[in-house]
Amino acid sequence: MSLKSIVAFIFFTLLSVYFSFLNPHEVEIHFAQNHSLSIPMVVLFLGSVLLGILIAGLLHGAKSIKLFFSNLKVTGLSKRQNKTDLKIEVLFNKAENILAAGHVLKAIPVYEKTLDLSPNHIGALIRLGNILRKESNPSRALDLHLRAEEVAPNNLDVLYSLADDYCTKGIQKNEIEILEKISKLDSSSSRVLSRMRDVYLKSKEWELAVRVQKKLISKIKVKEEKESEKKILCWCVYNIAIGYFNSGDFNASITKFEQALREDRHCLAGYIMQGEACLKIENIKAALKSWKKGYISTKSPVCLIRMEKYYRESGQLGVMVKEYKEALKISEGSRLETLSLLLGSLFLEENAPQETIKVIEENIDYEKNIVSLILLADAYKKQNKSAASEKFLEKISQQIKSNILSFKCGACGRQVDEWEDVCSVCNTFDEIECLPAIRS
Image 1 (tube, rainbow, N blue to C red):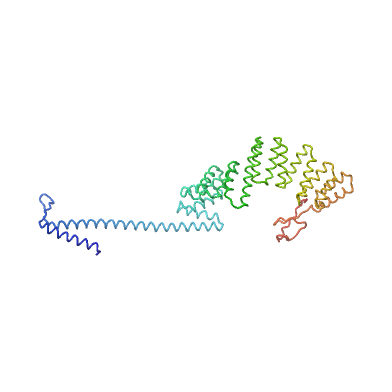
Image 2: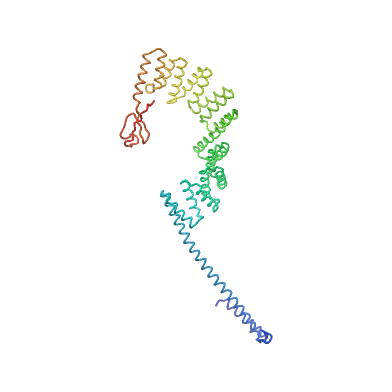
């Protein structure tokens, strides 16, 4: 017996003695008009107390029994749920292992069983949806991922999967809405900005692409990556400039071409088209300046060829000769060779065959270059030096014969002069192929 019960018993005993001492008379209790019972006051008091205790005990016992059965039911449900949860995880892990092993189609029914047991299993909804999208069932994939979004509306994996679904189905508006939601949830991510940029590029919304691309560039710290993204920004701005150019707003296009070149000073197209826009508004000086600056920045002969076209049309080929000579002074390697051929050809047009011979012999190993041999043969012919011309024509013939057949390794792509059983570079056996083509 607890101390609490002992104290209560002593209290009621003393209280009973007290009432018995103060109330020695009996109390008459009427059950009906003719039926009554006389009992001492103390008995009535103690009886009432005991009855109250009994009723309280019965109520407490009934509540305890109810609670016992309720706990028993909850325990049973918990055990069954734990068993089901374990089975779900076993199935999901099995599906993950099958997928990791590369058996994509075999994983589908296992994911389906997982969802039969747990319709809102996020992992299974995401994985199965991604598989079905790749297996050309984007509509079912979208349904699964929408269900997953209802369960976990802020799950980034779910949202990216949804964006992929809308991309596959070509619903760009919804794809952008999902990507904007991701951007709000993860404002520091460059991945979502890259995705948004790609959507705008695909739909050719260049202004929006520029806006997003600038945000993306601001988040990139690695210099090489930043330069790469700037090239994409340059391309976006360039397309805006082309839009102005095609619509006839040449001044606006010049401004945009300049903006594009600030993002990437090696953009050849920017220099060429900026010059064309200047030419449209008859600002010849600015056009030539743009093309010349383009050659200095890109080292591309295309800029000089465009200048040559202008000088040819305006009857000023002599000026272009000077431009080529200046470019030759700062050129080397294959670029020197290309410019020498262009200048040599120009000299022939200007009836200066001796200059053609000089520029080619000084800058090109003409014995190995068919084009230079052709120019030399033509130059000597114009000088009425038939013997020298025929000599170069004979060299051209010999070089063509020696280059009628070429050989190429099918494995590494290396070209060789003669067939080999084993490639001397990649050591691949029996991959040297004969390519009937004339190599310059």
